[in-house]
Image (tube, rainbow, N blue to C red; front, side):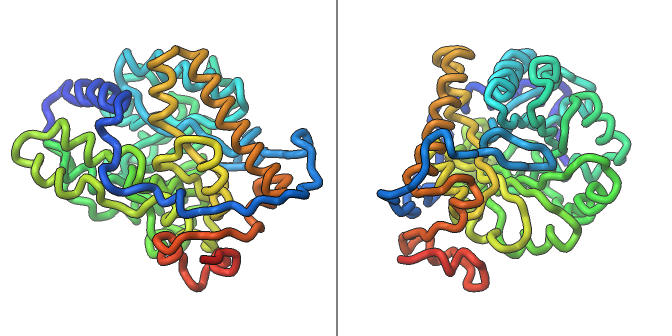
Length: 360
């Protein structure tokens, strides 16, 4: 369990924001492998732009388009303004929004950054707590966390790689699967199991399905390295270890491919920078895609207007990708054949329906 001093969580959250507004925490030599996905152009789409229906459902809530503003921050005053802007834009465009870790709310009742329902009355809002904090909490405490933040669902995040680098981070990850099972059974909101930049494998996906999990956020490698974030914050005792494992993880495209055919609804996050990459992830089988750092950077550069324009551009690009592949809906896009490069094809399970659609 963490041995951080009281109040240091708030300092860490502030450092996370500052680091994630830059590119210093990107993966150094590993991509999300979405460049290995080629959608096949349809010169006769027999569709108009207005015929395309991008709506989808995730965590039992309908989205106007298959995009989430993925989890980034919370727990400090600076996060309050950021999350309210992010949630406002999510409401404007009919998409989803996820809080960063709500550990400050759970452990010290710090609500800064976790009250956005007044600006996003209809948007999908995802709560967020670490599986180790969930393990050590009563279900009633987590129910109160969800109620306080008025979240529609609770993300339970898995972050062993990040924690072992973090000074004072958790070192014991036992009991996580039983914790998730308990929450699936006892909490009245959907449980979304998410990684934090290292991806979810097929084996882990199967174990989650066995305990009743329906939704996951694969959060694969190739975007923000949270190992990198903690490495830049780390004391000398863990810095060398962090440098070694900076690029650890399953690339996002590979994680989506690994999870295909298991019956899970997958949100693809991890280095998604634009609507074309989001469309590629959906074509691989994701229900939706999440974008984090590029949107935080857009807001930092130009405020809420720039943030809204960035989201609008992403949605335009997803719509255009559907048109140019002749796909009227995301479900249609998931039926189209794909050309994939060898680095990604090696990750596609032979028993997955995806293997029948992909050609090298």
